[in-house]
Length: 99
Image (cartoon, rainbow, N blue to C red; front, side, top):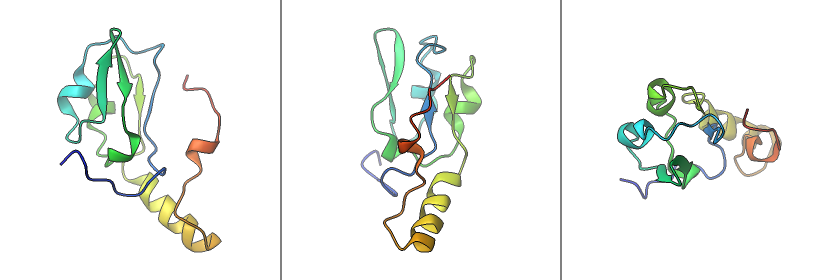
């Protein structure tokens, strides 16, 4: 199931590497293998595989992960329709720091 992509570049998932303690809980609960552990920290290996279920954020003991469950794809579709463009929520263009 890990190769299933919903919409590209619309997921609201973010991970703060500074806050991550490397416990690996996100890896255990993610149904689509979005995360990997490298250098004693979790990393997002493919945001587009995320289905925004929120399991990772709910189980992260240090709140290093945020995701607006179900919002990214819906917002991407609506924005695309309203702007007559490809679906995008613009979150990848924000340039905001993760924490």
